[in-house]
Amino acid sequence: MDTDPDPALDPIGPHSLAERNEQRMAGFCSGVSVQLRPHVKSHRSPELARRQLASGAHGICCGSLAEA
Image (cartoon, rainbow, N blue to C red; front, side, top):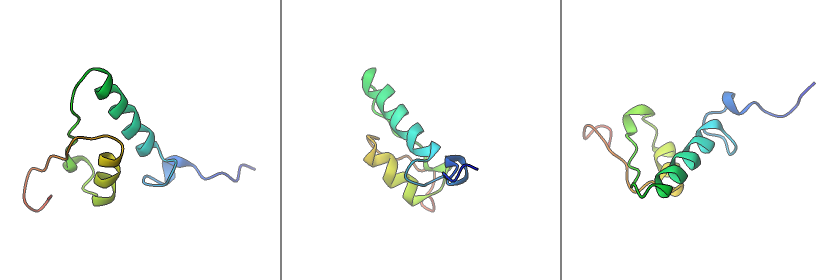
């Protein structure tokens, strides 16, 4: 039986799909000279927003003060 945790079951774990997607999108934007500014509305998580910034996002977009 596989004892490794399934990354899809831990959306903000250290080896999660979210982390791989953050790095992939940051790499893509860097390669085409675009500044990535993901929208917090898609996840509404301060932790994920911090991780997106650490992965290379230029900023975070918010639609309202409540999201900020």
